Amino acid sequence: MSESRKAIALISGGLDSMLAAKVIMEQGIHVEGINFFTGFCVEGHTHAIRSKDRERPKRNNALWVAEQLGIKLHIVDVIEEYKDVLLNPKHGYGQNMNPCLDCKGFMVRKAHEWIQEHGFDFIITGEVVGQRPMSQRKDTMPVVARESGAGDRLLRPLCAKHLPPTLPEREGWVDRERLYDFSGRTRKPQMALAEQFGFRDWATHAGGCCFLTDKAYSDKLVDMWQHRASRDYTLDDIMLLKVGRHLRPRPHFKLIVARDEGEGRFLEGYRKQFTSLRTVSHGGPLVLIDGEVNEDDIELAARIAARYGQGRSAPAVELEVMPPDGESRRLAVEPLHPNDIDPAWHV
Amino acid sequence: MSETRELDARRLLCPLPVIRTQDAVADLPPGTRLRIRATDPGVKNDIPAWCRINGHTVESIEEAGDEIRITVIVGEG
Image: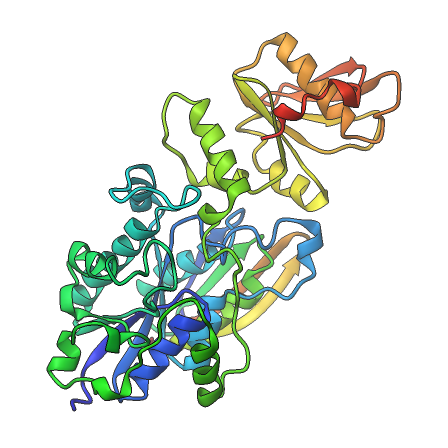
């Protein structure tokens, strides 16, 4: 077995990819990690926004896993390239807006490009046959290998014994007998292997590692596309979908209402891109208006914004209206009565 | 005296400040100081973790209001 062979491991920050990398490291292979940032990664962009989250210890689990394994980690920004995966998934979406099979194929393809550029020999993932309904089935695993271009340079150490031998196994770079035959949704074999390796701590994401598997998030994304001329998006768009309370009182505009001080601070950074509302006569949240609005729309938005402030029971509330050009003005309105807020406005 | 570079990662949320740091460091020779300005508190953990696994040194972490300033000395990589 050659000591000089090198593998890149897709590291999500969860247990399976951590185990897969460790299994191969134990065979004397040089392993480095790679992590792709799509903009939708749970690991990413929201753990610092809400006030209630600011005091929690924060860590990026992919970095943490790499440190536990003692390997380098390459984090790759794929936000732009990922758009095509999300907007035009060849294999369709899962339960929500999650294009899991296309996503896995995309990441393996990017990893395959990376190994070719950097002189590595093969790719490792923590996939387990039967663990995920879309991307980790026995019939879809060959699809990922084929469509990514990685072919038999893609090795899944945790379930390799259920799959045909790959190039690293056939060439003797790794010993197939020391790979595993995990399958299904049970986590027991992974727990046992973690115990064997002495791993005591790892991240668990109930809904997977991607916001697109989350129904509330997917609903907001679909709402945004339905009310725009195109299905395109920017990183700001996808970050704002995670922040605040979203209400669409009219088809052509929606409001993003900060739910706490942390979100208000975050939304402050967008006041040059959106018309914003802030109550000045009472305490209240910062509100962004997303869409083209006329004076009647602004008044309705102000009445809704007033409803979410401390002056909600006052006869009138004064707000500052600031368009993106910064020419602010004051507007006094009667807060909207709770019964007048149509539940269907909540996105 | 070694060269000092600046990186503005304000308003970016993790892991983007780490990715920007990684990309900036890739073009810098060992010994260069990179001063990063950020606003996501996650950088206080993530940038030092990234430095530890990639052989770079965090010289200092300072906070001024909502801004976090981290100085990294580029290692051999």
